[in-house]
Image (cartoon, rainbow, N blue to C red; front, side):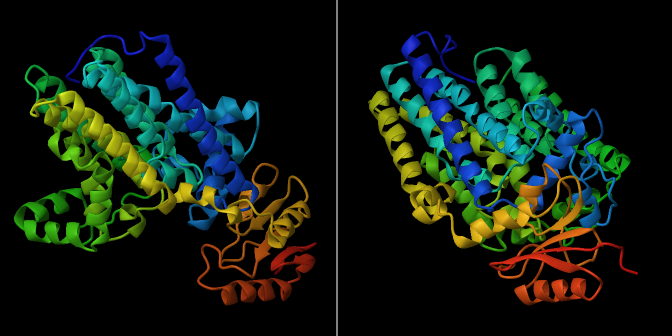
Length: 487
């Protein structure tokens, strides 16, 4: 967007340094994810779901997830395209020829998140005019993104389709800034393959262009394309893939569908405002999205791109995860927040007597804020020896999953299923008996979707009463099997 349109990496030292930052970021993300996986801190929801889906693609089939389908009542042949419209996952299928298992997804996500770094660096460097102050600001922006809390929380929550979003968003913004409109449009439209609601982000980018003379037609096209994509994916494509229309509808107080909700919000704006403010955690999350860049995103029209995806989350009355600081949802918009911060800081600096000094101060404080926040979010775990510890329960978990033969159908607790997904047909151990030949249970720690450890223990007792026998018992883990199907 506005700024110097010269190539960003004319200095070889910058190219090497940015490549180093990118590599270190990818290594950090992969390390954090793989250690958590090895210590049985990953979850069937959602890592096994994605693992099963990408394995289906890798075998030139549909992205079937028996675990998702059985647990949510869709059946064992459920395609994840009926849950979320994410055909972009097929791009990861060739990697399963190298290593077939969920760790491949964790490493791929690490690389994808890190690949946004060069685009953000180039965007900031060009926006600030290519001066020495701009170079410092570009590095600060890139590192601040790499260590930002939305990225940290997404990395900590195993793998999700959001892995593609920072890269595509950063590419769209930087290529547009560089005058490469075709490449920018391709990156923006690529977002539509990531998830059914990414049309809202595309529409948000269109809103930004509507503020610019000479680009309003392109902006209107993006707004229309984004809105049409949301309708097409949610109303046609997802149901055609076996999903249920309205499965993730979370706006009951506003109406039973999008039309009713828009009409209600227009007629009763106070109701919509009340939803935006309830609970207060919604406002806190929105504030923390722009706070790392010292609130300068609020000075930039680029931040308009945040509005549609943020309203989608903050108007919801259900699915509290959507407005939480944790999980992966904030990573969908983190690049927009930093790009808006850069543009806002540029606009502010131009109004001050010494712009370069202002840019340096903004960059230094932005980086300092992000570094100061590291211990309070998911990367803070890396500073604790407990994160790396191989406890007796960790060792017992490894022995428990090793007791399950290859190729069998197994119901596994949420924390153990990822370790079995690559070599078994894995279902989630939940409240409903599936009568799989093998069951791996945890009765010491509450696991999703159970309400208590007592409920889990009762579930094991029920299995024992239906012909199952225990073949492994240690540190709260139970491995059970049966020879014939219970009647």
